[in-house]
Image (cartoon, rainbow, N blue to C red; front, side, top):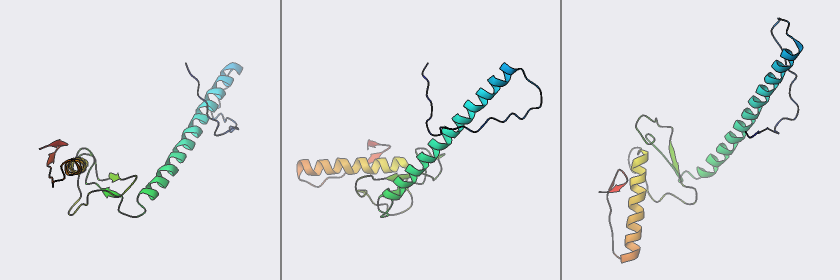
Length: 139
């Protein structure tokens, strides 16, 4: 069994026992140890969550700074996943532009796969090309 400890907080708050029943010395030490360990786990998870949220906020600001590098989605992979989803382009602008409405995740995949195929065909043949995709498969 591996042991993982958090170094986020070196000093723990003193444990507070709120029950008024007298306990034996060994039982009291065990309770205090379990309480302190649980409390330190909670502090470690809160610290990690706060750190993750700050990184996520920074990345979101970086990726959406010019307004052209994200596309809001109507829903995620399935219609039951509500409209909290967005597609981000990390390196450059998106190669597609939404003209009307909000696409779903699969619609974006279809458009990106179609664009990639058309781009490769045009470069390989030197001719104009077109593609149609339905549910991430050429149609």
